[in-house]
Length: 330
Image (cartoon, rainbow, N blue to C red; front, side):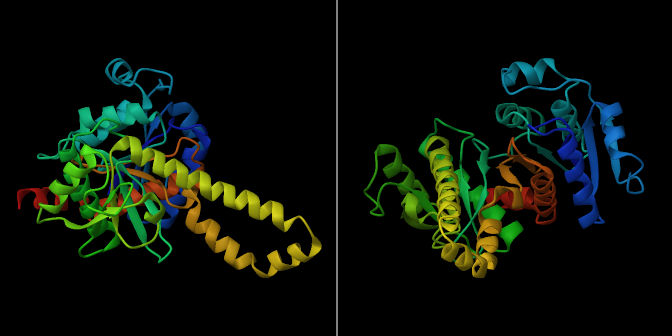
């Protein structure tokens, strides 16, 4: 399999992107990477390490910045690292894409060039979050579609379920609707209609409403939401995790006794950080497209880029797009 990698996407490109690519190739001998960007700079960073032809470069002299209008940039900057990578996926030269660049440009470019799976109204961003019971919960959507129709959430549920089946081997994913209460009559008109549609779709294992505090409980495998509320829930979870670690650090250094206790609990803290650190888990999958696309965090360093590349590889191996197409046909 070959994955196109936007060499100039993200705050730490291209050096951290190249390091991540090399780390991914070292961990997966069946992987090939097509790196797009300024060829001279990329070759200098790579050196002689081309992994017997598994790491190739496609020249793309320009870069799409986060301050640019996504639609205009995609249409006018055809020689940018992102558009060249997208074109490689669209033409079949690559099987999937990773970028840490402008979220808007990645979403619009992927929708226009890679294309939606037939039957999907709107593709959606879907990060995999750790749960207290182990495993992951897929939050879909977390920001691609701020204004939604209730029917979109049925598609989100189907996409995220196919993702759980293909990548994480969850046989019959439990789907919950993000709401302000668990009763089926709770929420605004949008939520009530979405609940009715989800409950009436036999291909979805819908288990009812889920409150934001229960997203990471492990009681469901998929949480669906409109992109506005899903993004707020995601950022709240990230902020809470960061605040907990900051408070723990402050408490640990407050006394000698606390430092000794922290030394004994070091393995526990390390495991917790591993579970909650986005750098360990890649990025958010952009579901509903004909081929896998993962949007890595803009602040991604090598570890996160590697994780995003392996995430796309898992989506390819798990035939996520094909599974969704089959579910839609049924």
